[in-house]
Amino acid sequence: MFKVVMLIKKRPELTREAFMDYYTNHHVPFIHELLPKGAAVHRRNFVLAPNPPGPDDYDVISEVFYEDRATAEEAMRAFADPEIQRLAQEDEDKFILRGSIRRYVVEVQETRYRPLPA
Image (cartoon, rainbow, N blue to C red; front, side):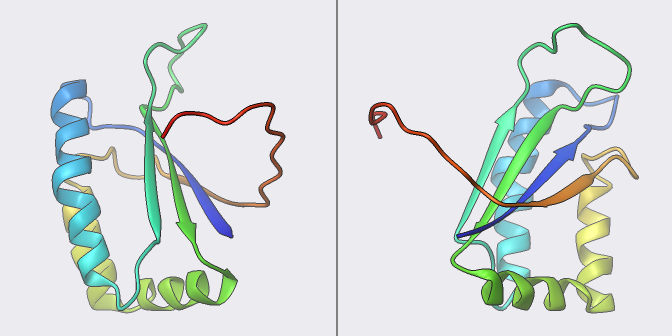
């Protein structure tokens, strides 16, 4: 498994609910359709209440999972296409604070003590 984690801030004029709705119901399917082979899983972790709250808080921590590194690299190459970049940026500008996205490629290590319900 290969994963990219993104920290994202919403546009300040949007409500949390509007941000969540647009991201989930429009942006994720839109980006998935733009790419020849998108993410296997796109998980959004919407922040409830930062502790302690601060000016640099993010509104969502997104996890984008790919089957393997080769598939992730294929998606990244597609994102390098100027037309895909333009379309993605136009859509992001509708709900994301420009310049707020922080991306991290991570190595996942996990300790499970018991299974979680599906």
